[in-house]
Every structure is written in C-alpha cells, then in structure tokens.
Image (cartoon, helix red, strand yellow):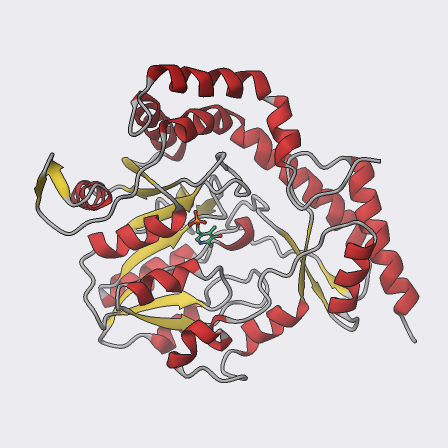
Length: 380
Ligand SMILES: *Cc1c(COP(=O)(O)O)cnc(C)c1O
C-alpha cells in the first residue's frame, strides 16, 4: 500500500516529468534566469486564464500582499481588516508596514471573513479589507465589495488558496477569485493548488495605474533602470519557476477536478457520521479544495489527530491558534472570548490529506481509520 501524504508533490511531478525536466533545462541553457521570456509568457497565459488585465509576478504570496498595500498608498496607522482564521501572512504584512491589522471574525460554515463583523469593525481609519478565500472557497465578495464601495475602502483578495475558484454575483456575473477587488494576491508555494518548485507569487489587477505602481514597487521602485521614483522591494519570479508554472497551468483544471472528486468521495464516507460536519459548499463559489477540512464535535479532536498520525495517515490542524491569541499580535490586546467563531473553529477543525494523486484505496483507508476511531470512542 502506497504511503499517504498530506500533499503528494512527487506523484504529481512524475506524471509531467518529461515536460518539466526539459522546460527547466531549456531555461538553464537560455541563461535568462530572472524575468526572462518564460516569466512574460506565464504572465500572459495567467492573465488569459483568469480574464484579468494585469498579472504581476513576484517572489511569493506574502510579498504580493505587501506590494498591494504599498501600491495602494496606505500610511502608518491606517487600519486593515483581516479575517481571524487564516495563515499569518495576511496580517503580518500590515504590521510590517506599520499599518494596524484589525481582526474580524469569520463565518461558522465556510470559515471566511464575516461581512457583519466587517461592518462592526469599520472606523474612519479603515483603508483596506483583505478577504481570504480560505481552503479553496471565495469569501462573500458581493457583500464585501458593497461595503467597500459604501465606505471608500480598498479590497485586496488573498487568493493564495483559491486560484481558479470563481464567485457568482446575484446579477449572474461570474468572476475568478482575485479579480474582483483592487488587487488579488496569490502564492505559488509548492503545496498550493498551482504550485511551483520553490517560492513564487503574483498580484492581479484590472487597474492600469495600480498595475504600473505594483510592477515598479516589485522592482526596486524603478521604471527606468537605475532611476528610482519610490522606495520599493526586490520581488521577482524566477524564470525556472515560470517555466514550471506554464506547464502546470495547463493541468490546473484537471488538478481542481481531481481535488473535487476526492472531496466528493470523502463527503460520501462522512455523510452520516454524527461527530463530523463535512465542508460547507457555498453555492455562489466553486470549491477548489485547497484543504478538505472537517469539523469534529462531541469527540476528542486532538486524540483523533493522534490516532490518524499513529496509523500512518497525516492529518493537520489549520489553524490551531486564532490570530488574536498569537504572541506576535499580543499588542492588539485580544482576549479569549473576543472571537467566538474563530475560537470554536480552532478547537474543532481537522484537515485530511488533499491532493491530485489520491486513489480510491487511499481515500477509503483514510475514511475508515477516522470513522473506526470515532465508533470505538462513542458512548464511553
Ligand atoms: C500560503 C499563503 C500565503 C503566503 O504565501 P507565500 O507564498 O508562502 O508567501 C498568504 N496567505 C494565505 C492564505 C496562504 O495560504
């Protein structure tokens, strides 16, 4: 029986090995290692895939968020709303730029930023909202864009976990994750749904001016070489990574189908298990299942995780600690009880192996290991 992994990058590579190997060697031979033709081609192909005017490749998803905040001209003390239940990068960049991250609770069903709590947290100093399209599903962009418009606030979509998910508005319009706000920011970290073989990221925008600014910031604040109009950063995508991403972009729809199929299989196994809540699927957004995350109630979640690990099946807690209780954000004075939904989710969630290479046999083994633990421990 093959090993079960949280993410099987090697199995995925093996299916496209010859294409990838020759693309890498071509870049090596070309010696155009930074911002070479492969980067420009990838940029154009991703723009077409997403139906967005501008893609600005950069070094990683965290940089993308930072560059977006810089391009929007936010100033020290400006408040940036971020969901509580997310990876640290989202509020981290705000703090780094001396902006004030303001933490917002999430929805209990789909774990994304809660529009009602956004309304409660808005002040005259609020300058941006960063919705995170968590685990592969879009936040409620209809509400968020309406609130942002009403208050003149910028929207930066963190779409690191939701490339190729889309959102359908009540008027029937449908848009790709990351192309609805002022900026979309994504990551090509190896384990993301479109991952390269190192670090990589990109910003998306439909605004020509913001695109030019972001491009300039990512390149040391210069438009003309060695003439620097503003303070920028060094954040570039390697040509080798772009060459890999071009190949994997062609596979992305298939990758998403494989993830959804694995999720459907899990859903069937877990449908009638009383301790488990399977992932909610918001009908407005496609779910690309960056993670398959269950909620566990009436059973010992941590003991369950240990049992899975002991049985050779990885299971992870994304995320174990709410942002307001992280030591790095102690200065925001968060207390236990301030964010009831996020705190509850941190105690209940468990994510199962989710990738493009899961077999029926592996899914069955994962599901039966999990269910038999719950059955054994029921009514004790
Ligand atoms: C991975 C991730 C990031 C950061 O991307 P990096 O490329 O690792 O810097 C930001 N936000 C979310 C939600 C992520 O999952």
